[in-house]
Image (cartoon, rainbow, N blue to C red):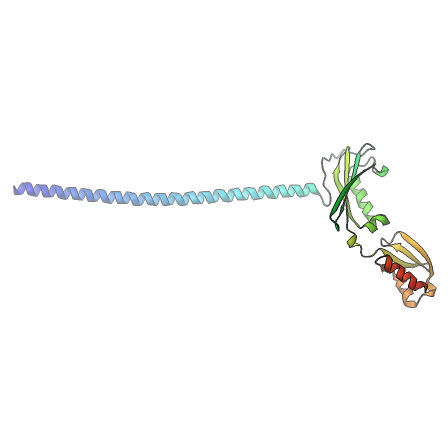
Length: 233
């Protein structure tokens, strides 16, 4: 009987040892599983971050390239729309002039007959025309405050020119200077004569004569007539 009890206790002991071993194995499996899960989550997070970074880099590069392309197409002060290098203007070309008053924030557009000097020109030549127009603008354009002029759209069928005005940027409208002993009034462009006053500089003071030799800038009509009245008195 004692032998049976001893045998049973030994079996129970072995069972407990086996159970303990299984528990240890199970716990180690759980620990390994959690470690594996954590490692996988970190790898997934790192992979997701890398993918996000790569997408961002690709997107930024794409946007940068598109911006560079847009800037190249826009040019300095005009946009070429549907331009063909072989296109030239003709009397049948629709000519549209857009105007923008920056001071009043007002836009307008009008259609005109194509100026004869533009007939037969290509895009580059029209750009040169606009440049020369600005350098040699009329007195009316000067007084209106013309600030810039450029091509918006160019093709053999249609030409669109845009002019931007801002009268508030005109520093002075008239310019007085002595020519052959007489006070002469120019517009502020200093190229177009407004009036020969008939006033002799010999009748003016030395200070006024010296000022007229250098040129006198006049802001507006009221100041102009005030100065001329003072010269005449």
